[in-house]
Length: 415
Ligand SMILES: Cc1cc2nc3c(=O)[nH]c(=O)nc-3n(C[C@H](O)[C@H](O)[C@H](O)COP(=O)(O)OP(=O)(O)OC[C@H]3O[C@@H](n4cnc5c(N)ncnc54)[C@H](O)[C@@H]3O)c2cc1C
Image 1 (cartoon, helix red, strand yellow):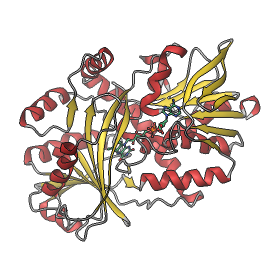
Image 2: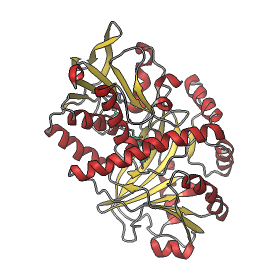
Image 3: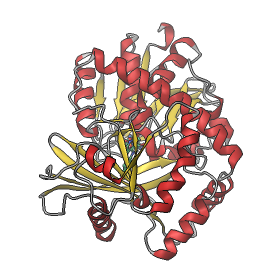
Image 4: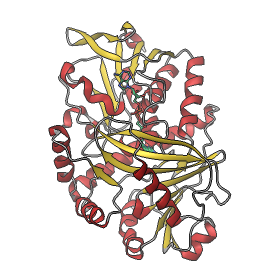
């Protein structure tokens, strides 16, 4: 890797680990700086879908109207805390402005590129490394309780077909035959065979162990404070444990990335989108296939050793308060779609902060102010899925100065 051999990655989530993986394959020497423990952020208790078919951005036509309608009916998974936080208000306005057909087409194309690339790289990763994370290629079952949404999904599916990510329509009987754990309330389902799943906290631990054996140096409980800058280059990072020098720096601090905006003259408009999950022992009537409970916008993921319900999107700043009302909504939602009832022992109740951009595209690129700083954040609802594509892209940019996918839609200068 020439003179860029010595790399510091700030932020030990799935994106930081993926960057470390590809850099270590290129024989770079990598140190990871994490304010807490590796994998303690959003990458821990999420739903673990490798949701490659998730190419449609959150900000798509009709979303704002639909969310207002759902909020009035009391069944919206979205919660926005009333606030005078000007940055959040601006973010929300810009999100609403992106809910148009032009952005949907452009963003879907960009997401398709990185998702297909990530799929290919995950295939290689799993064939080369013994990652213990209950990884399975079982697809994703989208379950519908309301006939109108079930039927309306056909036009979404037509759009997905254009990218070869289409799903198969199943009537109620076919759906129950494929997945006997679904409730009688279901009006129909769409089965998408392109999606996979794994247990994210296991992936993090297993991947981290492999990388440490290959030379990754980890500094935990080591919060980054700021950077030392000389002649448009980062010279070192100051942390609560002291100063670390390197040739190249990568910022993978997820929802916390905007903390460096002021010092580095950057504009990273990421907001924390809080989600919740409940992990349980695997129930007797567990589904075998991960299920997306469409009207509730939540997911039920089964693994050999457990079962997780996850979802909701709360804009309430940086906090890890476990709102019991939102947790109980997950259980109530699952009871409407699945036979598995809320009787099994709960192993963990969790919340995590998704790094959300208002155009629902990640930020992957080089800073235009500091020529040895790379940024990889803003992966929103799909950070686990896009991790391999992101890590390989950052590595290629450091190593060769170019990447295999088009990066303009992901650049930090687009804001
Ligand atoms: C309920 C829920 C369900 C989800 N389901 C899925 C799913 O099924 N599939 C999918 O692909 N994605 C899913 N996601 C999204 C996914 O979890 C995120 O996109 C992804 O984890 C982001 O990874 P990251 O590495 O950018 O951030 P994080 O995992 O949050 O890592 C960032 C790290 O940086 C550290 N850090 C921050 N500031 C500093 C500092 N100053 N100094 C040092 N370290 C610092 C943090 O402590 C943290 O560990 C879900 C998210 C939630 C909340």
